[in-house]
Length: 492
Image (cartoon, rainbow, N blue to C red; front, side, top):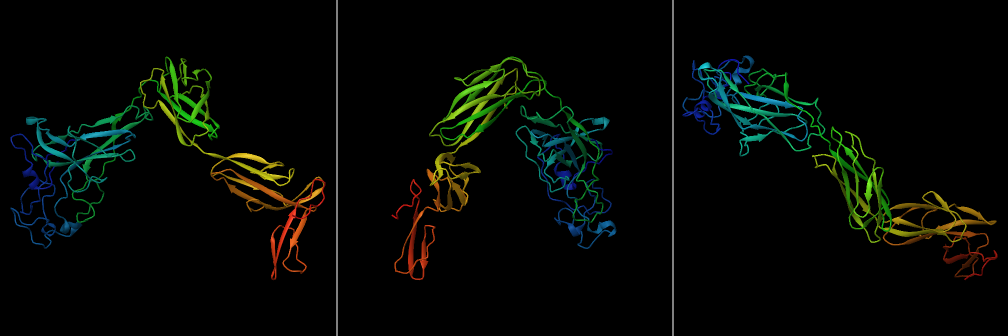
């Protein structure tokens, strides 16, 4: 950045200029002394404001007496409430289009170089990297760099800003600030970036604001109109090379003593075809045993859990998937992770050559569902059955069992009375940590009903197999299915 006229780059006030002036060609640390009054008429201070209102003087006294607290400047455009500058001239570099995974670095101090012929490119001042808000405003807070004297810029949504404050300048010469910028990124961090992407830079003076009222305390002093033009700072060029990646999915129950299948797919995420042999290798966790390994065009060995091929894979394409079938050990439980890697093909980017897939092995319990009379219909999760069924259901899973209220079997009418867990005609059961059985009980017209009363009063009989209370009488009613010939059984 080059100033258009002498004294365009100015420190905050005279205290800054004196304290940070070069001594024997050397600059001291970037300190920021207390403000000094600038209130002597006709004095050219060559600082950012040129005047200092006593009413807003944060440091009265000093080498020049403070102004009275009464306003000394006219109210026009707020001059009566204007005071010391919040900062010296600040130059900013605003970056846009910074991709995720890339970090920009800038020096914490930069020299001001003379543009005059007599001392061209000689250091005449210094500017310091400061922490500011998004508009370049804020108190003077130098940024601490690393051992090399550079600091990383924080990037938000692809934008980053570097702001430098002038601590000393030569008011009699034109000066230039040159800021070297370094872009750093890890291998493979910019795989999503294309040659049409670019980081753009916008430069100007900070802080920037369109508010031009001198006495407005909500905006910093001084301030500058924001810039809108930008230019490319960094262009991207794709590296021509293959890059193999691997993805893994699974299907199956993965229950103890059950089975499951992993599907592995290798893709060329680079921009050139692969060359040479490609090897896919698996690594099963304890509790899983490989039973089959195959893939179209792959040469696979089950014992070593590896597959190879040598045909070229064009950029963006995928090889046919590899299928790995496994058996789950009877005592397996909990969460296990299967891992695999892909290698070869002439690639050099290996950070994305592995894949893993986590499966949860859920314990199963034998759950039997049926009726008290073979041939009567019941439903489990919407499927009808007429004989008892034993299911292997995972612990914690929910299932629906139901039965019709009335049914006819071999000419005999049956009516539903209850489930063995006392559930409704249709209800949901949740699998616990042990085996369980659910039986639907039916009665028929040929069932024997037996009621025993505690007194010789004619009882009220209900063929529902339950206790009835009639006044002070307790009736215990039970029933029994007919015998094989359809005749009622005797009570008992």
